[in-house]
Length: 130
Figure (cartoon, rainbow, N blue to C red):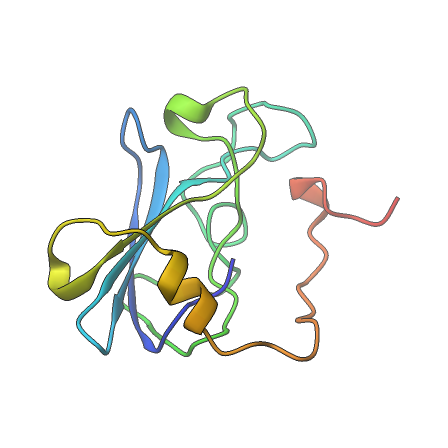
């Protein structure tokens, strides 16, 4: 997962329904919520991963850290009430910190990344080459 705009991140341990979460407070005043982050350390659904860098969010990422648009910030998963389902991202956009709106216009207006971003291969996440 990538930061959609410059801003600062807050990492949240867990919520019963949302699981592992990361909030991005964009410089524009928009709050972005990344929900159902990874909580597994193996290739299966083991729920043994903590809310730590390299499992739920990107290696080296710290709470309240400044990030730039396009920077890797986390890993999709199935935490919370998505447990046991397919890994996916529940992505919310809250302009001005208000209510959620459809993210579609934000995603279509986003700066395109012309080159693939190389993420570190992390064997404990089941992302090692096969």
